[in-house]
Length: 298
Image (tube, rainbow, N blue to C red; front, side):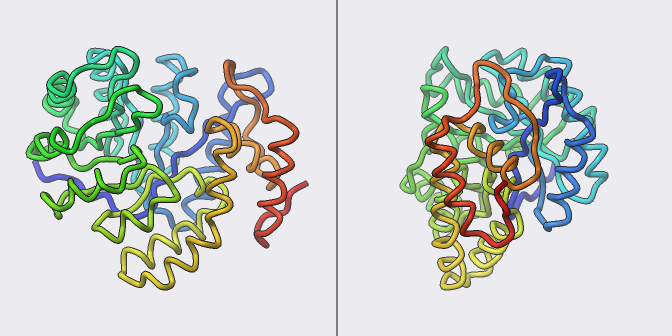
């Protein structure tokens, strides 16, 4: 099977909730349309930014179906389908394939901290039996407690259905090590602030939090970087950098959903254990947002 190409900006889209705590389907459709109009390459529903740990299995599958239906082939949909149980991740990946997703973002199993061999076997099962979807490995040791080492990524890169890795270890060395050995392999930044540096060593784009708020500007930065115009990319990166930092003043997605509310695109409350942003940090976020002409904090 030919691997699907993933390149550009993919928005790790939030999951909007209505006042009664249910999924706000209408607002979700509006958010997807906002992203498509901004020219992003794709959306990633049911990632951490989409509060996937608080979604029921039924809600998780519904959000993926809604995203695929709304996108309607206009942008790619990479569905978050990871779990710390291989069997559960396999079920979610198959469901995403049935829904018509273009790929699956599969996080390293969290809490149970498997060995590198265990990680390898986990992802091979998902690639072999996950309904034919191209997989993007997701390495974020700060959340999972386990680091998917470059050596293991390179082993997995030989599999036909493993199309790339979202590298969110914060280590440019790890991305460089992968790309030095396999320059053709797709490495997507998992941190907005590292999109430009990773592109400079051969990365293909970003799965972005900030593009929920300023998708056109994030896309502009990525487009410049992927075209090799690093001077223009650097200018945009430096303009965006305060926002990248502000969106992690507290645990993601608390700041980004707060920023969306302040910019007039409210996506509802959070599900516990996440809670509203502190007043002090919200004030800092407001100040950063005020620097962008396209955003009008209330």
